[in-house]
Amino acid sequence: MKPKLTLSLQNASTATSLPTRAQIKKWAEAALQPGLKNAEITFRIVDTEEGQTLNRDYRGKDYATNVLTFTFDEDMPDIPGLPLMGDIVLCAPVVEREAAEQGITLEAHYCHLVVHGVLHLQGFDHLEEDEAEEMEALETQIVISLGYDDPYRTERE
Image 1 (cartoon, rainbow, N blue to C red):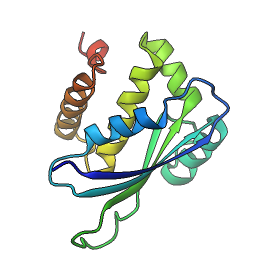
Image 2: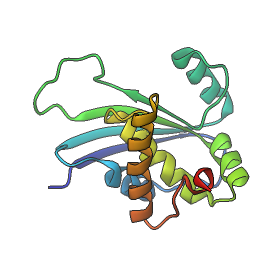
Image 3: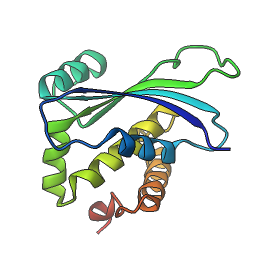
Image 4: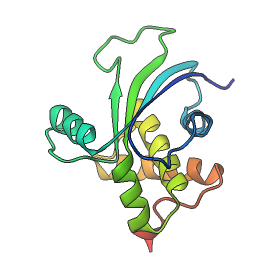
């Protein structure tokens, strides 16, 4: 059974080339793992200043990054039936710059970062090499299933 996703989208960016709510929902649903019943995710698209502030305040890194994931129930006990909940912040200027640098479409890069963020929300990480390999393989599988190229192809060449 496919998990039920309740999605909120907030646009706090001046960027004009942004994915639609329908695209974000499709990408996020594709990243939800089997066994999950419900998810409530807020996506917020921001500009550099807000992205940098959030990254500095929550991660101690004073620069804007492409995607930040905030898990609502990270420190809560496991409560049966409680949906997966969290916020995913995408920094539009960083996403645009990275897509141009990597020679990929903006749409493909947004897809990858939505998938990446949703996997983080579900506990996947890339701090250790074995975790990174598992997460990247899953991201690649999902992104390709959505009709885009392997997001890590340039790193593997």
